[in-house]
Image 1 (tube, rainbow over the protein chains, first blue to last red):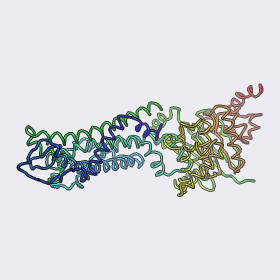
Image 2 (cartoon, rainbow over the protein chains, first blue to last red):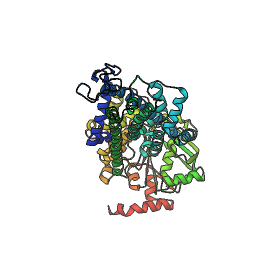
Image 3 (cartoon, rainbow over the protein chains, first blue to last red):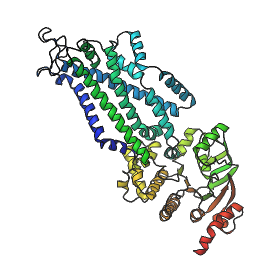
Image 4 (cartoon, helix red, strand yellow):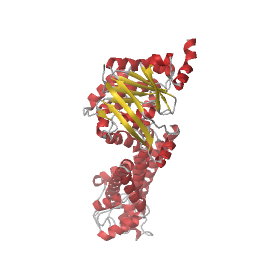
Length: 281
Length: 275
């Protein structure tokens, strides 16, 4: 019924496929320096090799500076996925901690956290982040992680708070307290494991939101700055040649779509498994 | 004369505010029972039954003793246990006493166990909650206790989840948890009501054996006079939040005084006569 959540997810073929695609993307990012056939910033011949369509030597073609697009997409994955995973971990951790605090920390903690959530959830995130970036000027990828992660914890906090409140009055929690478990042990041993599958859903969804968010920021010029490649700024470079050099746009978009799509599918399957379990109970 | 282990003096439980009451009532389908001037004592090693119809306040009394009342209910009066005034003591003191000196077994073993944790880990968790830092040692202790609780093939069963065990096995797990740290008083709230009759007999037997072996006091909460009559030397009869009778179980069976007690005794008499 329970830790079995993970076993059931493992047995779900769709979920396994999605996880495999995500895993491949992460591996590609990790091993980009070894996988990429060229240096992503190398401009071998800006005249002769300019805007070459895909060939065996350059499977994704070359860009306006004769750089290899495959190498740029692989290296861009390092930056784009790195920022996305970092921001996701930050926002989910913050959300879980603040949601837990709201649920068990008493009336004032609850009022404070819920109040902040209610106010900020009404603001469009992309606009808030752009406004902040514009205020601070261009930012290093680390600051992007902090900004994007710091603005994304609201949903997780809400869900964790609601789930904690649902689990807290259950008899097994009361029974654990009756045998002397402290508040911290209740949270770590009983409440968090109960909420973990739901947190995983919000994590997958966060990943699916944050990848396009970083791409959008870089695309409008506020995110990752050249010469560092990210999926967003490769796309930005490519839009000038949209009608003449399709490969500049298609490959980075495909990378974003595949990873975001598999994160969404994974979230959806996990949610289905949780729903099945709740029905069975 | 053995010293008194638990002395409850004028314990009242009230619903705090109108709003809180409404919420509590919505939570617990049944109307909230309120305790009125409950006074009794339990000596070390004594077996006491708490008998009463559903809704008479038995479980509220048990939770009040542990300091685990829902927030909508407040307790007044005095509960002296082991030299501590439980209602006045800080939460940290009460937490140290719970599980170590004062333990409770709940009615429904399936919901009282965490569905997401292997049962062995749940037993070991009691030791860890009370400061055992060595995880393997806590687990050995747990396995030993499960074995003594009569769980067949304890080592293999400890790796199962609660829903993979039978009702009787689950109740043995709960007993192992509550007896792990050798408490001086065990409160058992309808420990056998969710089990079928043959399993009930085994669990009661085990409970009695453990109680005698450890010289532990037992407060057995039940609506079932049969269960209490075979287990407890003394019986408290509860009715609408009051203790209406506090007598030796034998005397209750032969000469119940309060109309409530009489009704409860009469209810089982025909069965006894036939047998």
